[in-house]
Length: 271
Image 1 (cartoon, rainbow, N blue to C red):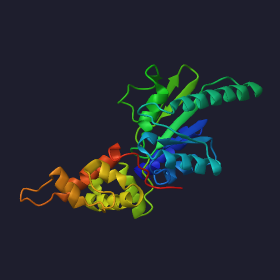
Image 2: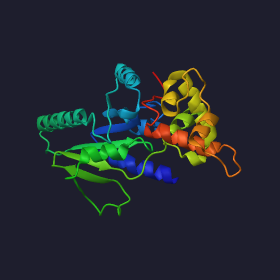
Image 3: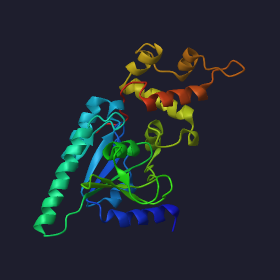
């Protein structure tokens, strides 16, 4: 069995006792940043889709995505875990689920226990930030000391909720080159494993079609002028020792600007 297969088998054993799953996706590409493996693991279980990093996404597009997922029967919340925006609704949801569990256990004359939840996501969707916001500073982890344990562990919150902390992440589902493009732009795939110049040029074409003001705001280019990697290199004075434009450096700079939100609030796919 592969390392991934062993990890999935281990998680499956823990997931059998989880009451509620949070699937964390990136609000800038909600479809592409969802993992087939995660969806298979939580199929048929109670779950909530978290559109994280909503502060970096186009708010109008995020609203459309929330409506889209709601219409197909998924529970969905848009949040900014880094700054804590939208987390109040998550807290209210957890409280409601904990009370519902208490009632169900009481009706079945079973012993009370905390609500068990887990958060899952592909790399760089902000799962750790989301988990930290839920856990807070007062939570105490069971098991070995942090940084020592390699397996999943439970974090208990005031004896009301137990959060399953799963070190590491599940890999993204890379279905095609379009998915590679989007996942590279949100940091779910390492840029050094791709050609930054190809990714950057595709980004500029996308911005020209959907967010033409993004380049003009950042580098003073006219909105009716097609975005150009060479133009950005000149404006930033990114040059090689022989005086030629350093397009690789420019490409990495542009991708990082997209990842950090310096180009504005941009969504890479739409419902």
